[in-house]
Length: 407
Image (cartoon, rainbow, N blue to C red; front, top):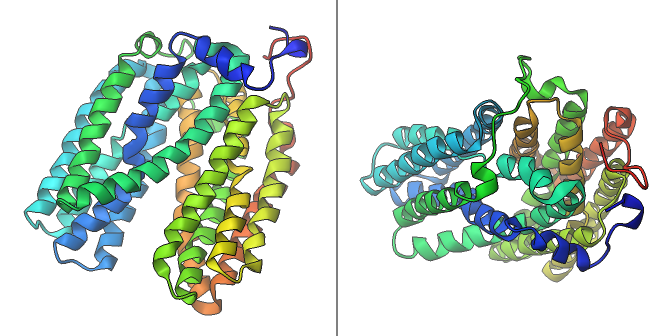
């Protein structure tokens, strides 16, 4: 369909799901990625059950998170070079075995350093589900349908980070080791089902072998988007750690989870709305959306109650998924030939590293100056990201032309 006459509204969902494998790709990718929302919390509970303190538990969770962030780009590069099925099969076995072994080590009260090493090894082998799915959407749904799919995927990712902790809470009532083992089993089942979907099985190695040592980062556009994602991640990490500090000041630390859920729900709604009307100019949506996000993240500074904090973070969540969807669309267009799957993985890696760093920096600021300092730092870093991408906008792909297919 020409871009001058593209479908709008709910009809875009109908068009997307009219493609034979669209629903199964989305559904099984969510299942396969549920462990992304289970890993850190389940490890904290596992280590605490051995009698270790929160400091040691946090180190184990951090080791796992860093390993996931480090392993993702390499996994994406392997997909580009070897094809999806081979890499998914290999990582299914490795991750499930290693994370399952982590559960066993916790159950037998193994030394914390041993648990940390095995958990980190598991993190390095997490299957690159997101990279595979995003790289094949244009083949499954066409370039226009892929824009709807990116926005819908960005929205539905919130299910992972809401549903994952809930599953951990349920499984941990039986035994903390059950939560870790459950994540290993879900990853195995979801990854196996995902890799059996015909478009995934048909995914071939990239025709052009990318030989640069920088891999996907050899593209200046990918570097711009990775830098933006890093800034956004730092901003999120700092702003979100201010939530439990505020909740504690209000006398109920447990309600911090409600505020975070509101943030996720706002992002979910924003992504669903964005899928109804994808932008022809992803570059503009990223720049404007990031400036808007910075402004909305400042609203919690006005909070005087948990209800107000929840409402402000709910509103602040609206532009998140639309920005992410636009970043996905740009990555697919600016990535160098032979490095598309790896390029997609750098988004998650940059955000994860940013969140970790933002949590640490924000925590120090909050200890020194109170919860508002964490929010202000988060707003500042998101604004820095907006300025950076504005300055470097020439490194990104131009808008789609009316009446012509995208490049």
